[in-house]
Image: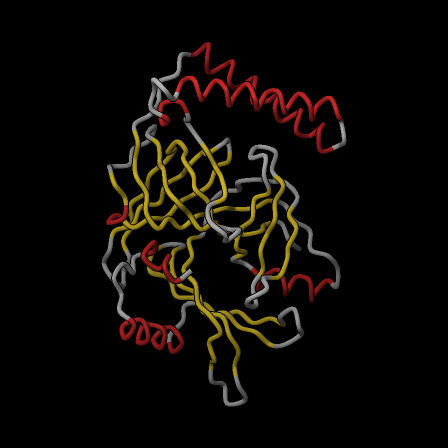
Length: 292
């Protein structure tokens, strides 16, 4: 996750500079939260923001002399809108005191896994109510290590309407297949075979980026990293107050899933504009809302 520091404006920070920066964070954080971790131990999170909703968080413990001992830190970008209201399951990460969210969203056809930013609110809520937390939706935001802006693909209206109907039908088939409908499983298999054949024939004469308008798929061995391409719905330009680096916050729709992407301007190839497409690799983070 340290490689994604560049996504929030720490592009070429040296180890010595990072050490001083972390010490400054511990001495003067903007936010501090406390809760009992999954093992029942006192745990704390310190946050420092360098642009609205963008910053770095430290997680660790305090000793008896009130000195903070950092376990790990991570960059973050907080999304402003709900991306999905599908059911979310939380699991503890195996390598550190953190939570991963698993969301089964029909729009994607695969389980969406993301790093949970608001772990402390969830732990506090569980401890206060002594019951399972209820979820009302997830606000998703990705940090992009690098990316590029592509021109849009012009789609005739009749073809766009057919595509929309096919997507809706596919969602129904996926749901039926998950419920055990053998005919739906066979139908999905045939659709995928036809799609593969069609793409194979077209790619001989056309560029793949004119055939595929949007995709969302896992990338690498880490479960919360994704390779995406989607349409840009909104563009915001902000600046990291600490490093003075320019950042872009892009609102993206990929496979009908809407979320934000934060990327350093130095790592973005092309000029982002509404209607164009963004292509890149992201680390997906999320805020689980509606807990009580």
